[in-house]
Length: 347
Image 1: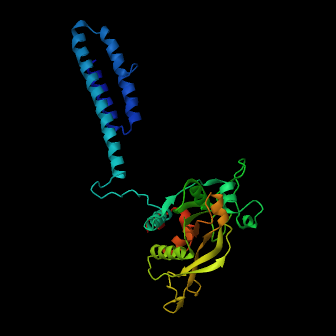
Image 2: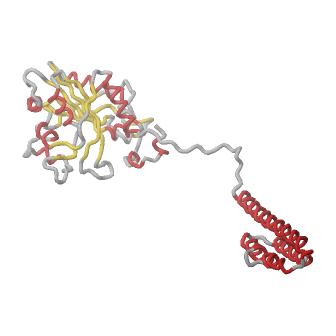
Image 3: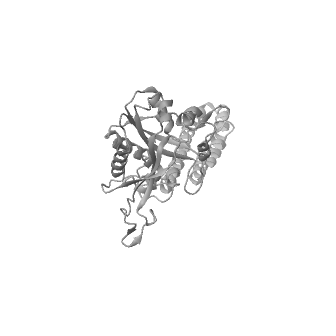
């Protein structure tokens, strides 16, 4: 019996030595040490041995079984370490190499430019006013001297809100001025900046764009005040004290007289060319159309509850997106909407 135990021990250790997978070790363990394994049969046969051999053989069998169980656990550990070594070899990394910093977001150019405008106009005494993007027709049109049958309504492709009567996405920031006048007595000096919406969608327009509008109302406000404010603001915006402005007669229903505001081209500085190369921005004329403006129509003042005989005022409106493109030499409107960090982080 002792020789049989030693033989089985040698056979099992030899098989463990060759085993190179966990499943094979498991099969060997079941074969020799399992409930129906070889050593279990030996333990059962101990009762048939003479009394003088039971103690000696039993002790040998127990010690052998314990040793083999330990050998199995060592083999498992050996295979586990080998597997971890292979993984470490494949996934090795040098922990001393500096890591790659995660990409961080960056402020978009449009809201940054809006803050710059707020700072510029606040130094001239203008407060910042705001209003809703979803606006009542009453404020977007009627109070601005654009009644339902007014031809000026055809000039604006409006987004009407479905299932909400007389409600639109504001086509301009002018409703903010009307709301402010209704809630405040003159004198008034405000700017309003924000999103506006029109059904424009071509290579040079977006259905959502940004505007900056200004309003000054008080006694003895004149065109001279408008020209002074516009000229100084544009000089600050384009960071060029040589900027000049000129007015051309135009039509807007909420101002009378109405005009287009031009400024000298900030690229060629009004020369129409740069180093004898024609300026593409101003098309060689040296001037850029930059804003619409005029003296507030008396009807608009009266709609807000102001005495049009006592008070006068001016209003102006500028497209922010275009001004940003001019100032920062951006040639594609789509770049504002793609949110590509490679573009945004330049500013």
